[in-house]
Amino acid sequence: MELNLSRDEIALQARAREFSQSVVRPRAAAIDRDEQYPWDIVKALAGAGFLGMTMPKALGGQGRSFLDAVLVIEEMAKSCTVTARIVVETNMGALSTVMAYGSEAQKKLAAGLVLAGDKPAICITEPDAGSDALAMTTRADRRGDKFIINGKKHWITGAGVSRLHLIFAHVFDERGEELGIGGFLAVRRESENAAKSLRVTRREQTMGLRGMPEGELTFEDLEVPADMAVLPPSGFRRGFADLMNAYNSQRVGAGTVAMGIAAGALDRALDWAKTREQFGRKIGEFQGLQWMLADMQTQLTAARLMLYAAARSRGPDGSAFPDPMLAAQAKIFASESAIKIVNDALQLFGARGYSRDLPLERMARDVRMFTIGGGTAQVLRTLVASKMLGWKLPQTRDGYAPNPSMRDAAE
Ligand code: FAD
Image 1 (cartoon, rainbow, N blue to C red):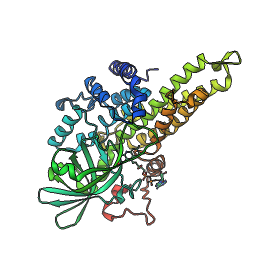
Image 2: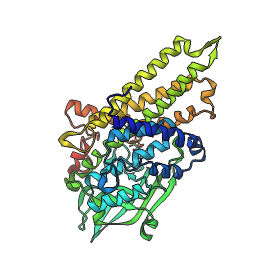
Image 3: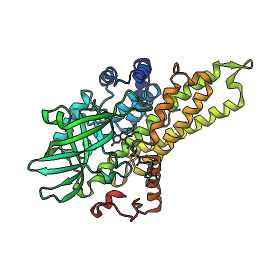
Image 4: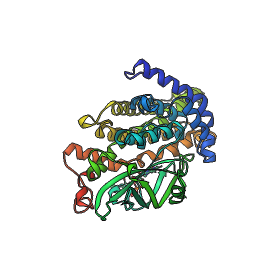
């Protein structure tokens, strides 16, 4: 099933599949067991040209499309979720925000770090500001040619391993007047100041994805040069909405990781259905399981088609990012159906599926996160409904964002 892929896309997919099976798969169980970020895999991914593929050629990238990235992510996720997420975040996420809105100096900084193996971190969520991101309290105060950042973020992917951080904060000018929400680039360990003032203050104990650190970051008087503010053309006032628009590529990437895990689980279940015998027959001969397999495949195909369509799409006004409506629907459907597919694949293995000897239990833990991270399935449904109805649907009791100047960003 080629799904209208070009020759070049099929060749890239085949190369990623071979890499995933020969380099990544043998390491996957140990990455989960040891809870260690896989620097050896990062080096191999860099060598194979899978980091920074979507960056322009002038910056050392390959000018590849989001669909190219999706094809690679899917193959990696069939073997190892942590590896797939590294490919997402070195081709989408904070990196695509910088590539869309950053200055030349910011783009060069991000490109250099990613090509050298860095997985940039995006820092939005706070203990009291999750789905309601506008409620964040982290602030950036202008002092001469710098911004001083203070605050706390949690559940930051890559905490302690990422060097480049895109930190979201309320921005205040020298007179203490709020300008809106902005994104700021800070490099961990770049200077004495950054090392002390950008600290990992806790590692989250996660259910799955254990080789990828999730952590709490504390910023204490973190100094960021003013030219490291990532400013969309709309400026700070409407900037948060534009910066979050870049997140649509990340959503497609996250949905693809979920879909890839499901595809890997289904491959294994299909093999088992053709080999395991009970009652003197292959278990795949039982119609109860045949229909289960058919349902799994149907959901997988639908998720894949939605994700490919979203990756190929462009948002309104020629945006550089996937269409928000398609990206949200694809992530909702892929993340929810992947949980069901992996669960059914595990069921097909009986007791063996429940054992740590096989990857099904790891896949079941890993896949659970994708209805949560990067916008929950509930919040994304609100986004879809808002576009369908043509209404802004702010969720606060009085119907407005906390700061009236940011009503646009709350849509
Ligand atoms: P809450 O917002 O407290 O939501 C709790 C529940 O209420 C959820 O079910 C939610 O869907 C529901 N809910 C909330 N509001 C509404 C509403 N208006 N209508 C209907 N239902 C609603 N954040 C980052 O900034 N950077 C990262 O790198 C990052 N990585 C992550 C990695 C992992 C593995 C995970 C699990 C999370 C990560 N996050 C990251 C955080 C993630 O974006 C948040 O968890 C998410 O936005 C939800 O916020 P919350 O956990 O505070 O849940």
